[in-house]
Length: 228
Image 1 (tube, one colour):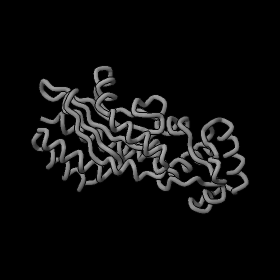
Image 2: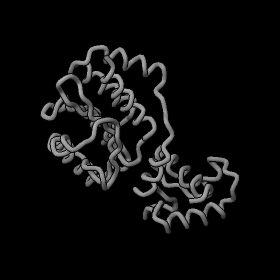
Image 3: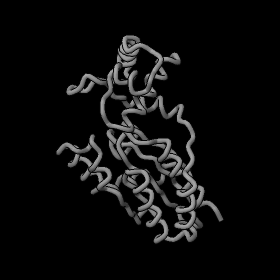
Image 4: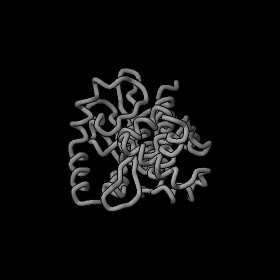
């Protein structure tokens, strides 16, 4: 992919992550002050659509990213750090590495990420919070999607139990068709060891999630758990 197409695709993805609204060529040029004509952007978007990176929802003239686009985006994801205030909050919350502390950290993660958080303290002891965050996402607002998300929550322990042993240790991202939580979702998670126990912490949200922020969160939590 050439640099111009890459710029346009990344801009579409960033805009959609922020707004959940399809965007057209003119909107892209105006909002992001791109030094490219809207006609050129339109042609590049047509090529990106043909290549399977963006699609046009039926109800809109704009385009949205596909799973293929998000996978491309993740391959080139820029590293992000937590703010000093967030670092302080989580360090204080995780001074002791006990279940109560992990639950407090999970609630903070849900607030910061705007997504749902699950935390398996070991394979058969699951805590989750921030479910209302999932149901507030625009792509999950339809009746069918509310049912699907509710059904997912009902079997969350079953899904986690099914993947727990096979997951590698450390932070990772599961997206779309490769995500056991559902094709419309993404999960940023980390399996960790703490003494004799093995645990799993993760952020669950739509495919349109802030990957830089969520990966930074999970990486920091993983590092804190592994700090003596």
